[in-house]
Length: 441
Image 1 (cartoon, rainbow, N blue to C red):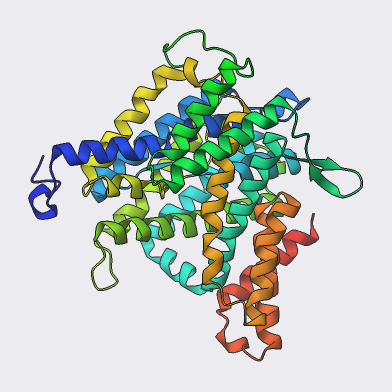
Image 2 (image 1 turned 90 degrees about the vertical axis):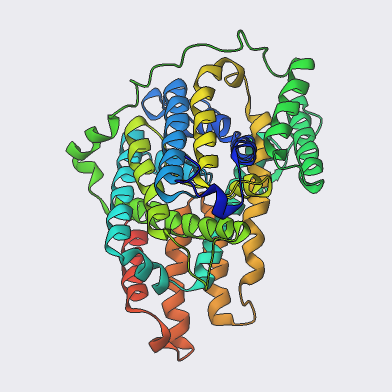
C-alpha cells in the first residue's frame, strides 16, 4: 500500500493521509445537505410533483457519486483530490433546466449523462485540451465568477435576505423574521471561522446554525441519529426515459448539455491545478497523470447521473486536506469512505432548512468571484463579453444564458477591435450555436 501510493517519495504516512482525508470531507460535507435541497427545489412552494425529485434518493446519489469519484481519483490518479456534485452546476440543473425551462428532471439527468460521456471521450482523445485552449482565459474566469454570483444570489434568496419587489424587482427582506436572522447568524459564524483559517469552517458553521435553530424552535429536532440509507429507486436509471421523448432533442437541451460540458471543463481543470500546485505536484508547468485525474470526474458524473444527481466535479476544498498533510491518493480514499458512512446519517441531515444551508451558498459564491481580479478590465473588447457573461447568470437565473451572451459578444468585439484573426475558429462556431439557442427561447 505504501509503495503504491509512494508514501516515502512524497514524505507522508498513514496518519497524515487519514487526517488529510477527514479534513477534506469535513470541508465539503455541506454538499450532502445542500445538493438534495437544491435538486429537489425544496425552497420552491407549489411545484408540480412531476418536477420535484425524491429527496432521499438524491441524498444517496450524492454520497455514492462522491465516494466513487474519490475512489477513482485516489486509486487511479493517486491525487489527494476529492469529488462530489458541484455547486453552481446543481443550481443550473434545478433553477434553470427544471424551474425556468420547465424540463423534466429526467431530461436534466440525461443532459448530465450525455455531457459527461462527451467529456470522457474528449479527454481520452485529447480534444478536451484543444477546446479549452480555444476559449479565452477571460471568459473562463468570467464563467467562474458568474456562477459564484448566481450561487450567492440563490443563497440570499433562500435565506429571505433578498426578496421579490414589484417596484425594484428585488429588495431587502424582513430582517426581523426569525428565519432570516438565523441565516444571518450562520453567515457571520461561518465568516468568523473562515477568516480565522478553520479548514472545515463551512461545515462547522452549518452545524452551529442548525443547533441554534433547534434551540429557538426554527429547526426540527432529528428523530434519530442514524438509519439505513433510503431507496435510490425513484431516480436510479430514470434518465434513460428522456432518450425516448422527442422533446429532449431540442436546441435548448443542446445548450444545456454544452453548458454542463463547459462549466465542468473549467471547474475541474482549474481546481485540479490549484490543488496540485499547493501540494507541489506541478513540475515545469506539467502535471503528471493529468489525464487520469480528468477522467475521474467524467466517470463519476456518468455514474452519478444514473443514480440521480447533477454533474460531479473536483472540489477546491481538497486544499484543506492538503494543508493538513495529505499528499497521496490514499487521502481521497479516506474521504470516499466518509461519504459512504454518511449514508447512514440521513436523519441528522434531513431536518436542515434553507436558512441553515444558505450561508454555505453565499460563502462559496464569495470564494468563486475571486477570479474577477485576473480579468483585464482595461481592454474593453475583453471587458464587454466578460461582464455580460457573469452578469447575465444571476439576472436571468441561467448559467447557459450567461455563457451564451458572453460567447456571442466575444467574437463580435474582437472583430470590431480588428483582432478577428486572434479568435479561434471554435469560438465562431460556439457564437453561432449560442445565437441560435437564444433565438429559440
